[in-house]
Structures are given as C-alpha cells and as structure tokens.
Length: 491
Ligand code: UMA
Ligand code: ADP
Image 1 (cartoon, rainbow, N blue to C red):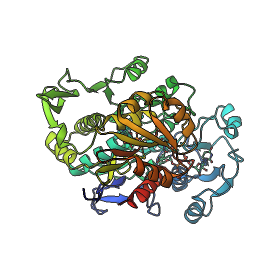
Image 2 (image 1 turned 180 degrees about the vertical axis):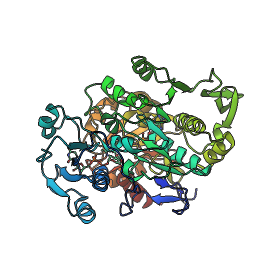
Image 3 (image 1 turned 45 degrees about the vertical axis):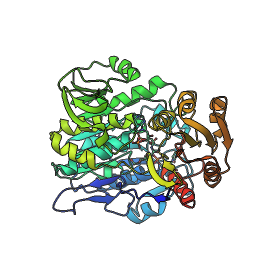
C-alpha cells in the first residue's frame, strides 16, 4: 500500500468574532501579542478593590494583570519561578507592574487588595497559607470574568471531551452567524475574550482548577460532560474532584446532564436542583427535550426525543465517546436557539481538533494516530475502545497519582504491545504487564522506532499517553508534534 501523509485541516482552538469591527474567522489562539482585552468599559468588581496580587505569570496571570490594570487597579505579580516565561511580555505591556519571582508570599496587602490565583497554582500552596488563613477569598480569572460579563455564557466542563465540545459549539454558533467568543481552558484566557458587545455569546471550557476559584458565574447553560479520575495529585479524593466540577451548575439557568454518569448523578443529588434540565445519554431518550443514541437496523442515530437528528456515520469523529460529545454540543447550541439544520451542517463539517485521535499517516498499511491529548486513563480507554484494529500503544508521562488498573480491560481487548515513555512508565508497566507485552523507550524517537518494528499491516500505532506531558515536554501539543515528527520520518 502507498504511504500517505494525512493533512489535518482541523482548526486549532480559536476565538471567533463575528462583527463588523473584526474580520470574521479564527484568530490564532497562540498569538498572545494581540490586544488582549477588548473591553473599554469599567466593570464593578465585587469589593471595589484598588490593588491586586496576581499569583502565577502564565497565560491567565498575564491576562488578569492586563485586565486589572485597565480597570485602574495597582497590580503586583508573583511567580515561584525565577524566570517566568511571560516575564518579558508583561514588562513590555505593563512596565509599571512589579514582578516578584521565586516566592508566592504576598508582600503588600491591604484591606482593598484582591488575591487572584492562576489555575495551575494549588490553593494549598504553602506560600499562600498565611494570607488564606486570615480569611482572604482567592479569585481566579474566570471569577473576574463572571463579575463583568453581560451577555450569555455556555459553560463546559468534564474530565474529557471539553475542548472538542467547546470547539464544536463555537463552530456551530459561528456557522449560524452568531458573534461568538471561544476560550478558557482550551487555551485562550477568558479575560482576553471580554468585549462590550451585548450580542457576543461566550463558549467557555472550564477546568476543575478554574472552578475552584469561581463563584459568580451565571451561565445560560452548563454541562459536566463526564467524570473520570484526573488530577488526583491535586484533590484528596474523587468526591472533592466531582464537587468542584458540579460547581459549574450552581448559577446556571439551564443544566445539561449526562445520564450515563452515575458518580455525577450521585454528586448532583447533594444539590437541590430546581433548574430546567436537558439530559443526554448513550440510550434512546425518554423525553422530548432529551438527547441520546439508538441503533435502527444496524445504523446508529443521534436522537432528540423521538426525532432522529443525524446518522453516526455522517460524523467525522471516531468512537462512541465522540457521539456523546456531539450530542452535548447539539444540546448546548440548540438551547441558545440554533436550528437543527444549521447544527447538522456544522457537525458534518467538523473534523475534530489536532492531537485528539488525529490520523497522521498511513504507512505500509499501518495507521499512525496522535491522541497526545489523552492525558488521563479515561481518555485513553475511550481512545482504545473507539478503535477496531490491533493497537501498538505508546503511553506514559506524569501519572498525576492515577490508578492505571482501569486500563487493563481495554488493553487486553485492543492492544498487542505497549511502549512506555516518561517518568511514570513503571507505574503503567506494573498495572498491565501481566496482560500485554510491555517495553520501555528512552524518548519518543525510540518509542516510534520500536513501534515501527512491531507494527504489521492492519495495525494501528496510537500515542495516547494516559498521562500529562510536563516531564518531557512543555505541553501535550509539543508531545504530539514530536510523535508526528518521528513517525513522519518513516513515510
Ligand atoms: N506557577 C507558580 N507556582 C506554582 C505553579 C505555577 O508560580 O506552584 C506559575 C508558573 O511558573 C507559570 C504560571 O504559574 O509561570 C503558569 O500558570 P498556570 O499553570 O495557571 O497556567 P496558565 O499559563 O495561566 O494556563 C492556564 C491553564 N493551565 C492550567 O490550568 C495548568 C491552561 O490550561 C489554560 O489554557 C490557560 O490558563 C488559559 O485559560 C492548560 C491545562 O493544562 C491547557 N489545564 C489543565 C488540564 O486541561 O488538564 C487543567
Ligand atoms: P479535554 O479538553 O477535556 O481534555 P478533549 O476534547 O481535548 O478533552 O479530548 C481529550 C481526549 O479525551 C481525547 O484525546 C480523547 O481520547 C478523549 N475523549 C474525548 N471525548 C471524550 C469523552 N466524551 N469521554 C471519554 N474520553 C473522551
């Protein structure tokens, strides 16, 4: 068979503004030189602070510092690192802001100060303890956004599928001619999205880290897509993680709930829920407004009530988990008034995001698939279950205290061999070495070389690490790009 290089035309996470003052279409989410705060209006921040200590000089810390300075606050920025990557950028944009490196212990604090903590900084950080012990309530960038936003927000959280659903909802709304701004955990800090146009609809991907420091958000609709163990190095137990995720429902007008998620439903029972509910699940829906799947004569369809919406084979995303993602996106876009026909057009156009089950190459009958965004066990299990060919799996990285035993069943069913990379390779090896052949690789080039020896025509080589990438790479994108590079040399 001919060797083929697959050109993925999928958009990277982007902000879309549909308005006369901006060219329609995506704005490069990686370009942080742009005017990062579009709002001209002052907003009334709770407590009317005059000074802010911004903790963490990453993307969200930089955006918060810019936003708060524009709001007239005096800003100090703190970072544990002695060389924060965005230091120069902050100095260029805000020469008057003082940057404190090497410690997060806040030096100047008054009754009019505000503590703004970046999502990647745990609230349990010892440097923050003295201030938090005095009763100071930390806020995150999403909380600041929530205190200022005037127009509707669609809020999306969950363990897996957030970026896919967020991007798809953004595409659907853009296709429907709405003025839409897409951001949050997907890579564009929410404060960069704020503008003064009341027609803007915000589509936000929210992580549990961001929800920890958010109280005032009142989404038009919110969803927790699913729950799988993740970030167990930050949460004491699953209950804490779930409780943080379901905070997204608190201020929401409507709630979209995944009926398949029993652990989530148990968590929700703890909350009084008198809101308008839309349900989705992998079964045929029972109520007119709910969404689900049904197999009619061997063909799977997506349904709302008893209305078939689209056949699964018209959707260009692999795996049942992606059908649930599409159901969720359909329900979210439908709830703000987009018609089924426009949603269907956008869904059939959507090719998925890079680094999520992205088919890179077909080399001598072997598919090379990049699922570098598979950063927890649930994601990699879903990836494996969506494949119908023998798999050589490349996995490993930072385990985040995960339990890898749930990988065993999917590995037994789908995987011929596992090649392990990264710091916690041994933990995965311990969990699965009695059900599959495992080997260790020194780096990605070695892993790809080993995979190319093992793979035969009809097999899939899948990078789905079930781990974070920070031991070897800056982020999951860099890891996926490295896989693409080494696999590409085999073409
Ligand atoms: N820092 C400290 N002390 C610490 C930890 C971090 O000073 O103890 C500093 C670092 O030195 C660095 C800065 O904080 O300078 C980084 O801040 P950050 O980790 O909060 O990252 P940001 O660049 O602000 O990016 C954050 C999200 N990162 C995290 O939640 C870890 C990005 O999600 C998000 O896209 C961005 O805001 C815009 O909203 C990334 C992520 O990995 C993709 N998210 C996790 C996930 O998806 O699993 C939750
Ligand atoms: P997130 O933003 O929550 O990390 P993504 O859309 O980026 O989600 O997908 C990350 C990975 O999770 C994908 O590579 C895929 O393997 C897996 N995944 C996507 N959607 C789901 C889902 N609904 N259930 C389980 N796993 C999923």
